[in-house]
Length: 183
Image (cartoon, rainbow, N blue to C red; front, side, top):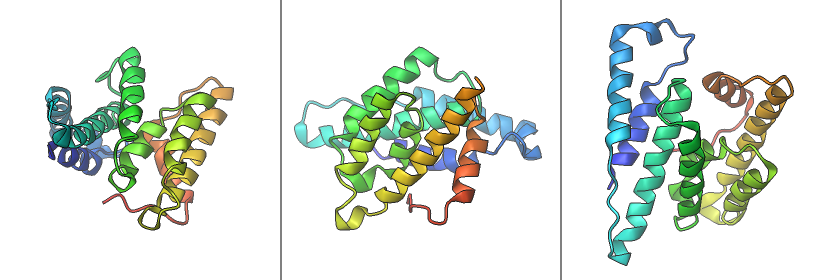
């Protein structure tokens, strides 16, 4: 059940911006291709035992987050646009059943995909439902980051341009004085 979490960690550590010369080497491309295969082929069981269903939901959210991040960060067609919307929607639904401390990075990754006000409110509702509890104050920073990321999307939408995913994350993270702990 923990393989999706490990895979997301590997992907986040391995993916380089397209402006990095190392991202154009055969070694890097091979490693990314391997990660794409692992992410695409990773199966999360759907147990009937209610005690295990929560762990399976968590695993599915991390698997989906990995697919979204890897697809966006590498500008690949790992997920078709129509599948992406369904994957994000399903994952956000599953997140309602997870404890908040288990979801800051997936919440940020999946929240980046919200394009409409309705989708954004849904993501913010997930943040709001738990951000005032003591161990989860970092979700306040997730809210700030999401607003900044959505602002970047909106600014680019006015020009009818899709922003580079890694560049957008870099700009927002660089401008932030505090970042949440994702570990």
